[in-house]
Amino acid sequence: MTIEWYDRRIPASAVSRVAGTFSGPYNTGTRIHGWQDLTLQGTAYVDYRLDEFLGGSAYTRVSAVSIYKNIPESDTGNWFGVYFNDVPTSTPLSLEIYNRQAVAVDVAGNIYN
Image 1 (cartoon, rainbow, N blue to C red):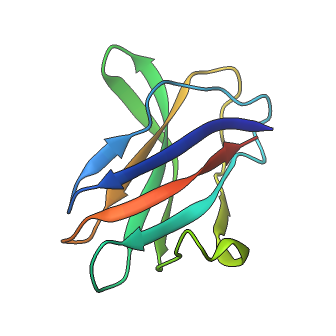
Image 2 (cartoon, one colour; image 1 turned 30 degrees about the vertical axis):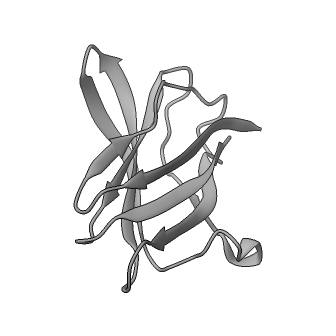
């Protein structure tokens, strides 16, 4: 089941939080499937961080994955698919995306559970 979509350009060495919160019905199987591509030469290096929303502007890290690879939007057969571990159910979650590179990166994908 798709529970959220993200699509954005993240500036160099910046963090972007996917708007809103979501929750998954299962503590296993929460995953993201998408693509990432640097806007200039080099290799995309992006952290995808799943956080529990505590209220206000407070979050606590639940799980994280890093992907070091360019995967163009047009290369749909090679989009990444990664799973998050130990995801709490029935709590508000949020995806934070961190661009580790010194140039902007474009990212897009779905969050599933």
